Image (cartoon, rainbow, N blue to C red; front, side, top):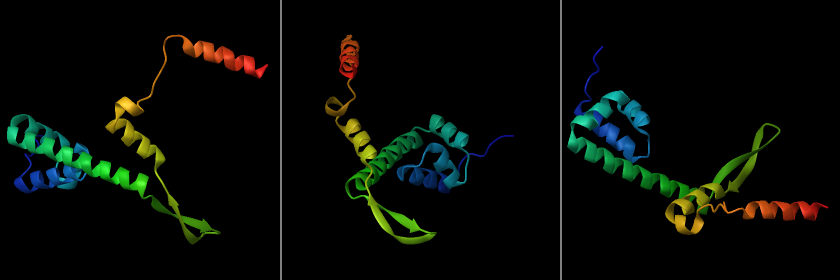
Length: 131
């Protein structure tokens, strides 16, 4: 069965969904089309491919902003007691903040692994402390 090429409205909806941070599959579903059709269109249409790339970048910016808001400003999580909501708790997304810092400043926040053998010495020192 041959798949239909996305129409103009589906293309616009697909690009808008990518710009909101959806994946290609999620954007295709939101646009009422099939991922494979949009991938084929990207291969055959340079203008659509460029628009796709721009939309993905905009979507990444949206996601970074959302991560930053959750890390900095927090979010409310409902608190329940005996099946009833009795309040809310402000929570912060520390792990998201760490990921964002690693992505934006990898030279400063990257994970550092010592493969020179120093780890074995530290392990032996730790074992000595247990004695």
